Image (cartoon, rainbow, N blue to C red; front, top):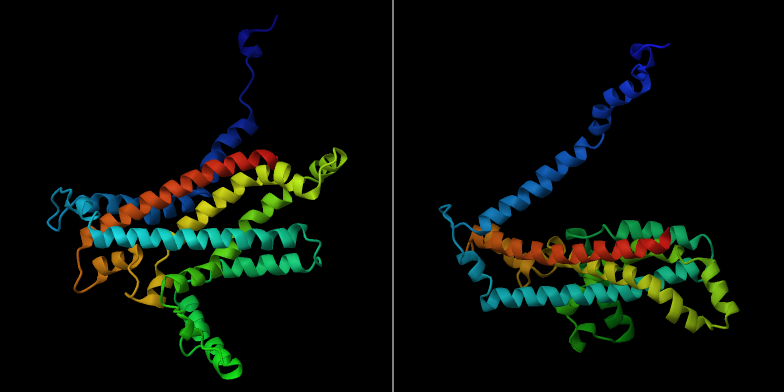
Amino acid sequence: MSSVADTAAPASPVGSARKRRLPLTWLGVAPFFLFAILFLIWPTMYLIVGAFQDPAGNFTLQNIYDLFQPQIMSAYWISIKVSLASAIGGAIIGFFLAWAVVLGNLPSWLRPTVLTFSGVASNFAGVPLAFAFLATLGRTGFVTILLREWFGFNLYATGFNLLSFFGLTLTYLFFQIPLMVLILTPALDGLKKEWREASSILGATNAQYWRMVAFPILWPSLLGTTLLLFANAFGAIATAYALTGSSLNIVPILLYAQIRGDVLHNQNLGYALALGMIVITGISNLIYIWLRMRAERWQR
């Protein structure tokens, strides 16, 4: 008869090794957590605390009340309109571009070319992008002069102004469209051939397939990506500031003036402005994540 000691299985060397390796595996994600704490969580908490303090460090709600001043409310409204216009425009143009590349039966070399360009263009923003548009569509830009000298067409005589709502929206489209292409391409790849074949067998036309099958499946991805584009445009500051300076009253420029300006210097009000931006972009991102989870059900 075996004793109890004999029946007790010895500790598995493999299990012990796994336990010893567990801390080492966590070291791989340690830089991510460190980066998130130092550059995301800590600054966000600092902004939240500062939004409810006066310059002396005392608790106050005055900064939150000041957000409802007409000038600040107007800045938020203009920022929302610019973000919505660039998000909707980028979503529509980006969808058709992604559709043409993925499902348009174009040459095979065109897809990696477009995706590579989109990966670069979606991150091309800030001062370089502003300078590129000024050098192209500014009053002395290349395209402006070309149209005037060669075709006798004065672009600015039509009321066009790059340093305006329309000009800023047009500039934002440069990185919004590629971002839409990058995010929507996997969703279009997820449309299975069996779905189209089944709809054809049942007698559906191409338009009926897109209206009754493809679009309902793609709708969460389309709406979610549009919200992501909205948040992306709403938080952009470098491009807007380099392009328009202080000529356009939008929240990022107003925030910069409050924190770094010499005249309009109220750092705590700037924190409150940033808090408002965090709330708006945070809601957009949360809805995007929820819609993305719904869309992933069809990609499994």
